[in-house]
Amino acid sequence: MDKEIFDLINKENIRQNEGIELIASENYASKDIRQACGSILTNKYAEGYPFKRYYGGCEFVDDIENIAIERVKALFNAKFANVQPHSGSQANAAAYRALLPDGGKILSLVLNDGGHLTHGSPVSFSSHFYNFVHYPLNNGKLDYELLRKVALEEKPNLILAGFSAYPYIIDFKRIKDICDEVGCLFMVDMAHIAGLVAAGVHPNPVEYADVVTSTTHKTLRGPRGGIILTNNEELAKRINSAIFPFYQGGPLEHIIAGKAICFKEASSPEFKKYAQSLVENTKACRDKLQSLGAKVSETEVHLFLLNVLDTFGITGLDAQKRLEEIGVTTNKNMIPGDSLKPNKTSGLRIGFAAVTTRGCTKKDAEDIGELIYLYLSNSISPEEAKKKVKSIVSKWKPIEEI
Ligand code: DSN
Image (cartoon, rainbow, N blue to C red; front, side):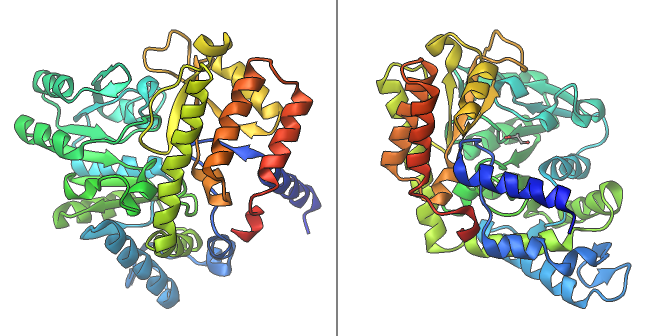
């Protein structure tokens, strides 16, 4: 056994079990999913697609990938699916390639306002291969009339919706109507809300968008990876070629097996209850923070933004570090219109996907809100805060049992 690595895995296991995980894009995959992802399937090369591979010996991985495809199609009511993207970034790269020529114009939300690196950030491939322009938010919220105005002025080839730090439900039909008026394509990156969509607590973009991409490890609670969905057969062919052979080589069949299990779990009545509790817990924590005097965004989904600069007079970076010291994990995040740089920020992004999986109740969520407020306002000591974290976490399921 490689002691050096397994000792570190054990330490990470303890960190995950003993901490309160509030990073909005994280979750805990089930034992079945983790077992499939750590299985001997990692040994198999399977370039190509089910029943059309470049290698022999693919009969079992063909069935696994085919089951994953059928399950995700049923889960999101899509006609075509590609389950091979190694991550959300690859899924987005392939979707752009399938939808647009190089240099095509994409209208998206900028990263600083809650978008994603692959939605046109200067440090991502996306802004190098495509011409991105952005729509603004109005007071932290999508203003569909403003979006329409910008779209009519810019005349993009594609409008992109779906965000990484947006606390409201998105009206996909409204954006689709704008796309139709402008005469452009519509793509949704639903990575953050995929679990809510699967559970029916957020509208499904597949009905409206030409292409929908997602990761599988955020609210969907699967293994780390991506998917691409469409109802258009011609686009489905272009997406497949854009993933393999254009952007990727051999698919990760062990991860695809984990994805297949995730899609089955996400179609269960228990998952629906999970997603409902997730939204309730997020709101309970947010409301508690507000009642204590914190400046917080609203929330209708699995996350909200806490303005730590206005509330506690510290940066997002400092707040993240201080909370980490007591075992509460969050990430610094820009607040729309933020005056500070992305490596400092005025805010924290707080999400309840992971802790709700472990059994966090509404009362726990309120207690977490109170704990964050008291600790960041220096009203309780680190020792008292750590004790509180321990007492909350001690009621939850160990991560091995999920
Ligand atoms: N967008 C990042 C997040 O939400 O954490 C992941 O790519």
